[in-house]
Image 1 (spheres, rainbow, N blue to C red):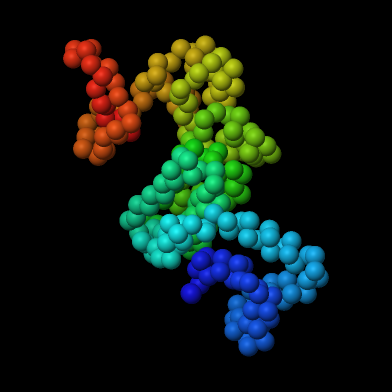
Image 2: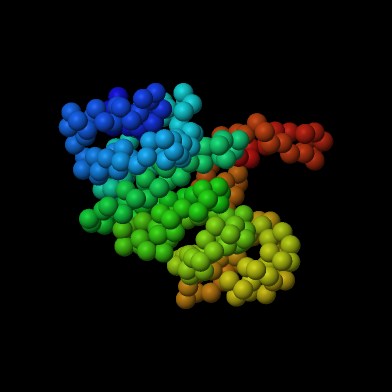
Length: 270
């Protein structure tokens, strides 16, 4: 089976887990000290009530790994994790379909947490900083490795750019740390202000009048940088900006109304 999460899952779902673990320990096949201690600790607890509860809890965390498609992704990797640690030129995309965000949250947390933890194992800084772009960050739930990456891990050559729907998501998930996370952000970018309440919340953060935030056009954003204050800027538009030409594909789900043709035409929006 190999040392993969698929192997771990197969152990947990083994029809006679206790006997299998005892046999592995008796034959001295468990070489990792921590794993050996944990197996011994599990076998030492009462088998009639406590062990089934422990096992049930463990399997619940790995439930999302059971589908054939997910299992296949866990067999091998398309990149070497050591390349990320060393800061070699590398681009990694993790894309979860919207309808899977809830059911596969554990898998997404596992991937993101692993990558963030790998970067913190660096012993020297890479020539170029590693950028993490995490869209819909609230879908991860409260993730301690993400909080640490934003507040403590600048010294590892890591830069984290997270995207949130609003401040309430950040406050809900990181009730005790959200202010620290905001204060440790090199750049705060605000756009898409939908109402006065949202504008007022962000006004307290970036030091702007709520009415000014609310008056921004959809193509505008307010950018706040420590020591430089706020700037009202035009948002980048990959459909029109030359820098993005030829770097995106059409999305068949979006349409727009062409006034000249007086017809509903497919757009190139993502």
